[in-house]
Amino acid sequence: MNSREYLRILKEEIHSTVFATVDENGLPVTRVIDIMLVDDESFYFITAKGKEFYKQLMDKKYVAVSGMTNGEGSLNKKAISIRGKIENIGYKFLDKVFEENTYMKEIYSSKESRMALEVFRMYEGQGEYFDLSSKPIIRESFVIGKNIQVLKSGYFINDNCRGCKLCYSKCPQKCIDISTKPVGINQENCLHCGNCMLVCPFGAVEKR
Amino acid sequence: MNSREYLRILKEEIHSTVFATVDENGLPVTRVIDIMLVDDESFYFITAKGKEFYKQLMDKKYVAVSGMTNGEGSLNKKAISIRGKIENIGYKFLDKVFEENTYMKEIYSSKESRMALEVFRMYEGQGEYFDLSSKPIIRESFVIGKNIQVLKSGYFINDNCRGCKLCYSKCPQKCIDISTKPVGINQENCLHCGNCMLVCPFGAVEKR
Image 1: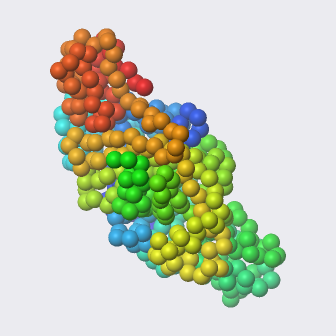
Image 2: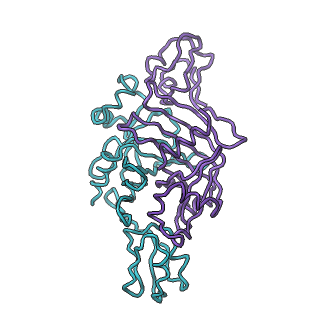
Image 3: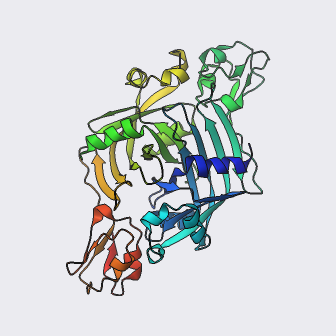
């Protein structure tokens, strides 16, 4: 899938997400925030000038977001996490936010009551997509913004591998390909639990 | 409601939440985490030693959490946000986690595959509960832990109020009681948008 498709899932299938910022003591703060609009390479949300959230957004110009679809049960879900740079775009698109998200008119019914609201946009970010309903779980990385490279973090096997397969025996996802030496980790199924690194007698598992 | 009831909602009705920590650059990170167990004044979650999340938990011993129920539509939801101090309790209650949350056995099916998992507990925190399905929206504060006072943040009217009611005209929740002078804000319905402070000609609205 491309970024546009992940952004569509974020707005249409997830919509209500959790946003994290950092307070004046360097500690995290979270609250539920809706994804109001998306375009090819950004998403938009709103908040009111009176909120601590607004202050924290203006301070760091950075936010982390996670959300998941409403599937029944913990395993029947798609989840997206994305973190990156944001900018305040003032009242631009505020009318569009209310047009595309009519339920917002129930909270802010008059134009007057919307005076404190401003629009923010994430224009550059690193994202991860999880499909927990798939077995093994699927994990994919994506980016939004023009000049961003996908950052591949995870566990990787180096040449110290002797092919003992102890890692495979402890892997909850069985996502280690033991047909080669060194063995290989299927990154798109890995949970990043670290069992393989803990158990390897040869120091052949690296975390990047 | 008391803390125990909010914790019950967090585990039983919400269950899958978003946890925020802070990375080595002081920026927020989020991911989906389930609330595994609760007791009278704490909640429990697990993660694997190999994850960045684990490192960040051990570093700050602090986490912020938000989650919401699965109601259809953005306004048909209850949401809880809570932030506070956590501790690592190792393997204590790990078996209980798998007993009470049987779906976890689908991910970590063998005891061997659980070797990297450890249990954490939030033992002291400040929480907020929102019922977005109520009109006006209901907002309540609560705490977990024995020696914690409920922190009441929000907007308050001081004696500079002349009773002009301009604040009431801009309030999206109409949660300002204008039958008194100074007028009063119904804290349990306030969205913290700040319209009242922006519009007051007398500097009578204080943010605490």
